[in-house]
Image 1 (cartoon, rainbow, N blue to C red):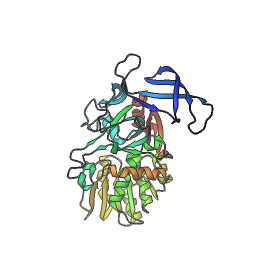
Image 2: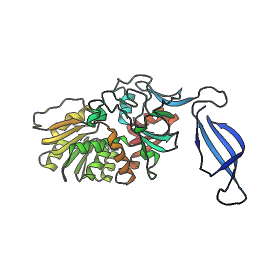
Image 3: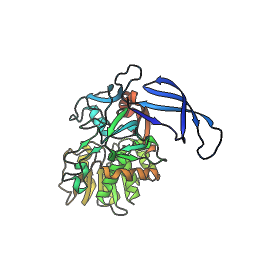
Image 4: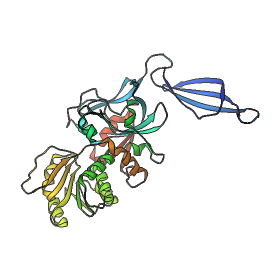
Length: 390
């Protein structure tokens, strides 16, 4: 039986009496300690403490291997919470207890059946945080497993690792009560960052990577199509870089958030002729256009919004027809999550210069994931970021 002990560090204690109570596969011990004052000759002090030991791979009552809850992809509109075996860490892996995660647009693509390359039986989820079982330290989780030795890793492009895997895509992900991970994928969480905030790192890291790569100049016009979580964080990071931001979406409730995050112009694509308005405002087209809607229609729109010799980043979707007739010398690129930006993402959240907590519209327990993803997929619920906790 492997146990993790969480206890305040009392000096030189002697355990006197112990009582046991099993509840929810956790072992609670009420113990009486006699603490010896090692520096003074004094009467020992009687202390009572409660210690919680997590039973990781053993059921105390039955002596059988315990299971855990996980969110498993079974097909389109068929993602279930199931019992799975507790993972066993190898010598170079750490067991982490799930604390909080968030539903991403990728999870919705899987749920809707828009992306079908994920294998049935895979545990989904790639944006989450937890607690190291060995040290009880709160950690954010980088979802890319990379080798450090291939052509791309040696050039600092771990995202493109030739031997890499992304948790929740090709291999089991993070929406499970326990996961095993390499130590380098674990980033300590500052004390002033909540579990919920640490569960929304991926879109912050992606926004940092995208804007750093695009290298906008001060006062450049940046047009962002889509004001979901990724688009809203692109808006925030673009403003940090001194850009003028045009936010485009089809939902007014999201555009209200864009305005809260200081977008200079907000447009509803269902009501406005966005191409005409962008050209009028910027005079010649936007210096930079970022597609963050995850729709082919948005991809199709990008060449008509950008100026000549401008830059376009396709983030939410990279498929779709591009008419490049008037996009002279325009650069088109795609960007993905990268482990190198995760510490900076945490730092921005910790210093309160990027806000992720304001994106949270719904909260659910892991056991209620089926309702959570239905909510995230329902426009009538007006979701932005749906957070999952234990």
